[in-house]
Image (cartoon, rainbow, N blue to C red; front, side, top):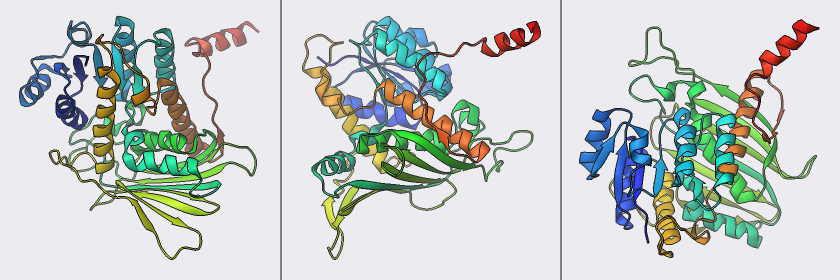
Amino acid sequence: MLPGVGVFGTGSTARVLVPLLKAEGFEVHALWGRSEEEACCLAKELGIPFHTSRSDDVLLHQDVDLVCIYIPPSMTRQIAVKALGIGKNVVCEKAATAVDSFKMVTAARYYPQLLSIMGNTLRFLPAFVTMRKLLVEGYIGELQVCDVRVYGPSLLDQSYGWTCEELMGGGGLHTVGSTIIDLLSYLTGARAHRVHGLLRTFVQQNGLIRGIRHVTSDDFCFFQMLMGGSGSSGVCCTVTLNFNMPGSFVHEVMVVGSTGRLVARGTELYGQRNGSKGEELLLGDSGWVGPEVKEMPLPHLHGLSSMVKALRQSFQAHEERRSWARGPVAMAPTFEDGLYVQTVVEAVKRSSCNGEWECVEIMSQEPDPNHNLCEALQRNKN
């Protein structure tokens, strides 16, 4: 039986997600927005019977058993942890910090019977599902290098908000880079142990953001990751993100091995073995039959659609609304994966500040919020 859904957010993802959920048979019972006006407007547009700007009204709604959270990263942890505590299944976007991610992991471990997955839809894109399968089958031999390029227009909102603030989770590294970090872990079956990066903010003001306000989030990012083995072994990854590019969106992921390469361009997958004359198309673009969505690139749009289909398969196999099967959503990133990704993001930021390679050390316990105060008191005592 499919659970009733409550959606947090009124942005472009929520606008796309709700019709996709309804198309797969889910009933969307409630919508949360940061203001009553935002929530009311989108609820009327999408035909959602209940809207509110109070988070508890959605979380405690008797018909809501699955919560989808697509809100600013600084607010994600609070809603996700509370939803799990109330007994709701959760699909959510990334948190703002590694500490927030760790708190989400703790909650997910405490309620293992509930669904708790991150909303990185690229894992569900057929091109990457096929790429991972071919990597396992040895299409390119021993994996050596991953190279990713993502180019597109500005990620900034029309008015000053969280997308402009690095500390609130804005910027290309946090918004897009995090999905790439997770995707590369999914494709390679490995995690980064050292990273090096460079972040820049080329557009600090524009026609709509000016005066005393300045953009602090990055619009250009380049970083390298060493994944898997130590020393000269393991996989070398390079990622370039540039959001100062007018024109068509570019999303290319290439993996190179000892006997060939695979490359996903947009939603299509190509391959070439050593010695062959050219690339072969391994998976074409199946086309998008839904409404056109300019705000969401096609790889993410197709991936979101595939994720919703997997959610339907996961829940419909059970009579109880909150019960789910792990198989259909086994490829989805867990909250543990979200913590890893956020740890890598923060390591890249540190590297950009100090110009050095940084180790990726995943948090095993929540840091003491009074740690600095305790150190200062100890120094004064001595």
